[in-house]
Image (cartoon, rainbow, N blue to C red; front, top):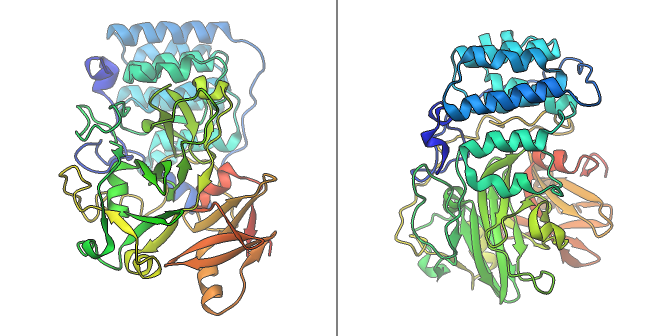
Length: 466
């Protein structure tokens, strides 16, 4: 049973990892974009002690008991705040994610000031989200987590969605719990092939083995609209962006290979993971959306084992697949217009207009939600590019990350100029790009700069490093 029956869930902030009617409303998270995009400086990080703080841990456990019993109000947060230190500001952030504006939120905002010495009231007066303001700073400061953070955060989050428990209960998980936040929707745990929408209170429903039609039957999709193109062997498939905005995950066979294809709308990143190349004894993963985020990147998981993945790297970060050392290899995802893609790949197929499940898709299901910058906390951002400038990213065999400014690369290639960095060169495919090393294609995908650079902080960047 989800927390809709619990007092804390009655005050949930519905947020912005949503597509349309199956998912949560697009409301919370506003403000992070302004903080980052305007180049606001974060205050100096507060001192954080080492070692245990048994008093604060005990008070948070008592607070959780009150929440479970439905006896929590603004005053009940104060004993935890009084016992805490700067590290416990992470738990302030976690609580704020689930508390709507009012006395409780005000108490938590004041508690953040008490624990860190930083006053964010000016940002609140400018109608910025307190949760974004708090969490952006904690990420930028690299504030250490409080003692027993995995357990405490897990007990809070599973009040909202009990199906998240396996992630939090794994003592070997390599998840950075500080970065983990709620995306405003619940877990998609429907069985493989289930065509039905998510049950209330809603999730982001994966599209499994959708019907594909020839390019000639794809005239319902305008030539100037965006598709994500994947090729494997002799087969090419186009995934319309508006469908991917609704489902954010596809499990499909292309060219005889099994793929999981997540699309993180918040990061501007579609990726294609081979799910049939796993160690012996490991069942082919079925990728699903958990409803959780890691520094604004969707957290995907395997339905068979409830193992969580780092969606950017394909590395299992919890559960049996972490124990098995699973890291999913990637194929290239090319971002193109439909017209340019089918001209380059005349034998391509495209997902059927109804997805093969009898569904209708809005042209713009997100309603411009991400147009003004990140809506979830991302902390500090590498200043070499704009926050949401798209880059094409590659990770070489030696682990070196390389990124290409998409806008600059498009201009250079159109002028007949080479685009090369650290042995990687770009070529065109439809309206998008492929990456080549010694003439052979290597896996690449586009993403917003803030996302690529935060998960690959040492990335080389063309043209800056070219």
